[in-house]
Length: 334
Image (tube, rainbow, N blue to C red; front, side, top):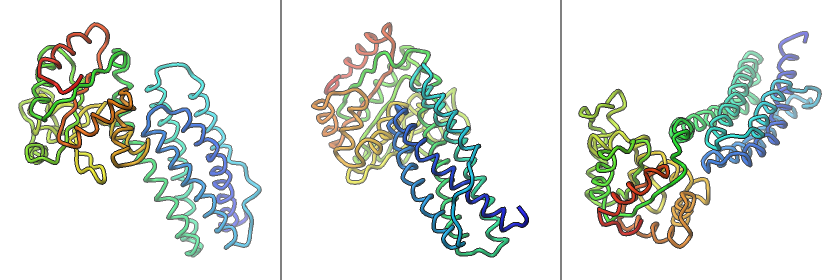
């Protein structure tokens, strides 16, 4: 390393080897992940990483050199850490959270590496290759942001509640309208169910649902849980408004849905991951929640026509109580 140009080439070769190692690592991480959204994120980044390798090869060609000669020991260690997680026993959601942590360590290493390379390219006035490096840097940042969103919206909250046994029973009830489903949620909470056990998925295309959507930006100051993020919740009142993950999801061809709770968030994550958007994707997402194919198709049809789902994650002790309350409000199906 006699000058910056030599250091630049050496660092390019280091990240080139890192990206090649990562191609294999991402394939294994996608196979190990259980969350549909996380699987999709790993698979998508696997495809991106192949493009990153091709960009680096273009850069080497532009510089009249090759990418051989370096072994990235940092990436070797990060991938080994990820493989160690894959072979551990434990709750699958907690393992998914650990896989995200390992993947984000990789992303931060790559962001640092490409950021440094961009700085070198600027200093060396290597503008053609700078643009290629910046493309990759931005993709790495978007991947890191996507992993953060999956972790904070779905995986981490599920991992935090997994020790309560909420995965033992999942009760899904279909109602004709959002108002009835809201009453079910309110009674479940009044009967002692934790909000984190409950989810709601409602078609947001009718006028009443759209009014709820318009109210989402009004702060819910009556809730004991109201805080800086309370503005997300008012459309469903103090009870439903504090459900984790309240938001609006849009599926191309199907319009919008109001989604609240962990299972609701997982459903819409699964749609994109399993088959892609559209009618088949909605049915596939319901299958991911545990419905058989025929029931999932029927629920999908009713949801598109304006129906609403209420989903409860409960242990054995609470299952009968939940079903009694959910059946009391005249569901289409439970």
